[in-house]
Length: 215
Image (cartoon, rainbow, N blue to C red; front, side):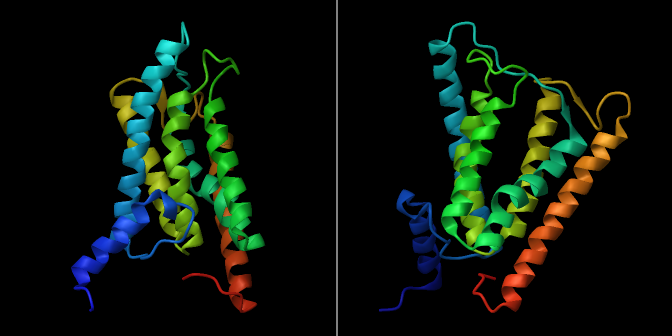
């Protein structure tokens, strides 16, 4: 018996949300399906962050959440830079999911040291807890052949968090670093362009070599 299209879509969403599927390709790669999975993983991330930071504050005495300055140009360029470096390039260079998995784990772990000092009382636990589910989203999106979606949503989400942080004054925020440090800004933008370009070159090379790459 063939299921109606709506019911089939629901079954695919339910299957993709099942933790048993978190290291496999998505059953669907439409924009709508990917957006649902994006909100699903980020919703888990927000919940994990809120619950986790509450526990951290009770367990670690005198804990102070890091308050590093945030710059819009660097925040937005972080999306293509991080996605390409830790997911896209490993995926298209090696074609091995375990290599991509390792890159993603490194990416997630680096978020905990987004602080001035490497001290247990000042580590970025909230940031780290939030990106753990995001790691699964990026990993699955890349191996499903939709890395461009991961790049765009990563930058978009960073932009949203930057705006909220500025509005609620959670941290100092500027468009570019103090003193008009255009060198750092331009370097960050150029690096993101180079890494995205390299990712695309590797993708085209695999396609030319007739190696199966999800569209």
